[in-house]
Length: 113
Length: 106
Image (cartoon, rainbow over all chains, first blue to last red; front, side, top):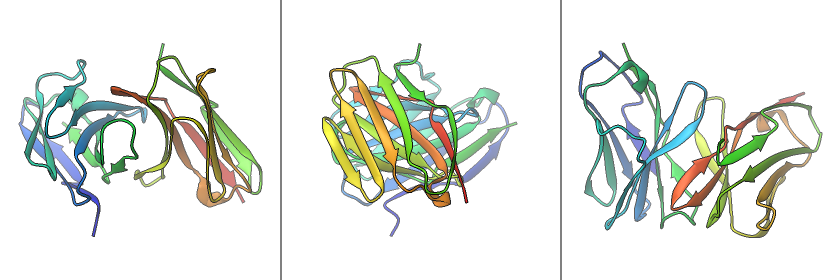
């Protein structure tokens, strides 16, 4: 069983559309994350979330919103997609926050045309 | 200036060589992470350190909290070690280095 899974693996869409990327972890972890990796391979955290607290990177546009239906899922919704949103988005989870090993999903490659 | 700096950016080594990748950071941290990203894109967490040294197989990671510096060493390097190695620090937020692209030639 895959520990952290993401769907879809690839997503090609037009500018202005709204899309969602799903993430699920079966590790029983309390904390989940979303990262963006740009074309230069630079990783940047977007959100971290546990049952009690959502921490948002202040540089993330409010077109991006995480939604967690339960502890095992953290989905990423993106409104009004822009060309610059093209990137690879990684979901990850860890038992707690910050001081613990993270487990990464396989990534979702988003291309906005 | 990035909170986390890595060097070198690119590294080519012959199989069997001892490899060192360096990471310096400018913020106070609760932990430092070394990640490996394979050519296929998948990311694996190698180490999480808050002090001292950890070893896993041919990989060794060290951290000096006072100097705000960490090193990742690979002994007896192998072509399958070819990947991008990323240093990250956690202090509330996560801050990432730009990665070191390692190529090990047979």
